[in-house]
Length: 264
Image (tube, rainbow, N blue to C red):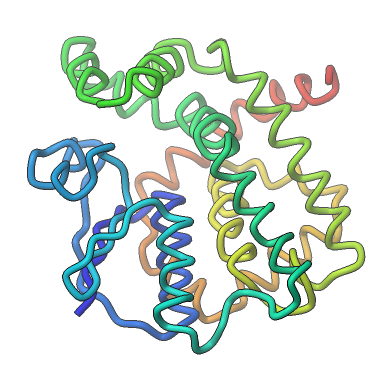
């Protein structure tokens, strides 16, 4: 059986679980505690040298990187297909997933999540333990970005950049959904699966007011939440302590974010 190395609240893991659920595939659970540093242990680094989740092992073959895994699953298990039949729509799907991979995940979402909420999980350990966890991040750019956001929060160098990226993304999603039921066509695709965890993250961070003036996007998210895959891939894996932390801290920071949006 396929093995999935993942984390309950990781957006990248969530989108792979959504793909698995949409396809009705079963898998063995290999859950990693990211705050404990499970992803940086030697055995896992042999599977994924970057020390990130998710990773799958299918038929003895290792597949890494969430978008690559999603496309692999659609190739290897083509029914039902989660890629549009139309070539142009398929190209649009790839542009959406490319946008996540080329900055929105690592800069916009990670900065927002860590700067608002998750930094406190590190800071509560004390500086020595916190620095030790940061220093175990293999990639030097990710390591220094993480250090800045943990210690500086909303004052971190990239926080305003993250807000600007989120504002642009939500605007583009609203425009796209003006003429389409889903992000790439009138059929659900890997693009919709890919973006579901990111709107869920805004929801968990108590920042869903960001969609208040975007009715088509709000409707898309409600339809997404009604799909059976959302229940099995996201709701059943919710970590209440994490959500309570995000919800409380996000509510405190939202007025500050609104001011940043108005200054764009």
